[in-house]
Length: 104
Length: 209
Image 1: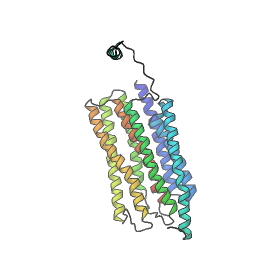
Image 2: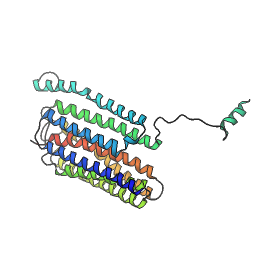
Image 3: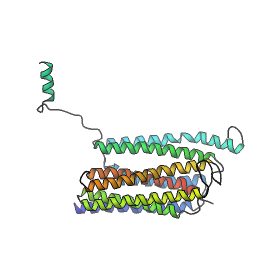
Image 4: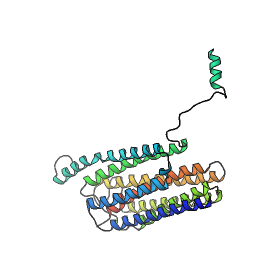
């Protein structure tokens, strides 16, 4: 039991170090003065990797029953996909503000 | 057979009762925490959607953050409390009550230090004139967006820290078991993940050029 416990902690320490490194990368990119899409893509990529590590390893979702795993993953993907409905109206508002037309 | 006889037969301890296998096979307390986390993800997603909408649609969005030192320290502290929480959980599952209590208290204390640093960050912003509906740099929506998203994180971590301390003390007293520590671990990892998304969205993408 002590060996299994030590191996479990080793796994968590490895993920912890990975998260620290990824976060350090994010801070490094933040200081690069990148603009717009390039910055967002990089941040979202690292955020996605962090999410996978935390949810599947630290929260032990990968050890749960497959039914629950699928329920959680598909539900969350649905929520995160549908929140992107905002972009059309956001760009419409930006164009109005930049061209000084329409509602402010 | 009369109704009384049938009722007696149904409630008899010798009557075999067949239940469907649970589709999730998960303790109900743990399922409740997962469902709570899912609802919290939706709330956080709505906050981020509103923030992204405003940020994208506003040409004069302020970029006031010059130094990331405090935020970096807070992030490192948060990640470290994730590890200490897991070490405490492992100790609880192995039956090491004293070790589990120690690591849970360390995690709770780390969370309270994080909350203190967060409030200090807020005080600095307020000292610079950033309010909910006004700030000295650009659009008035910046303050509301900043305080709402970071306030979401602060509230969850603050309450979570207090809950951790209570659960740790009750675990030490024998009222709670290792399963309850596992449930707190789920919550703590979630709030840490939320912070890992807030840092790039609110701070790193608004660094002063």
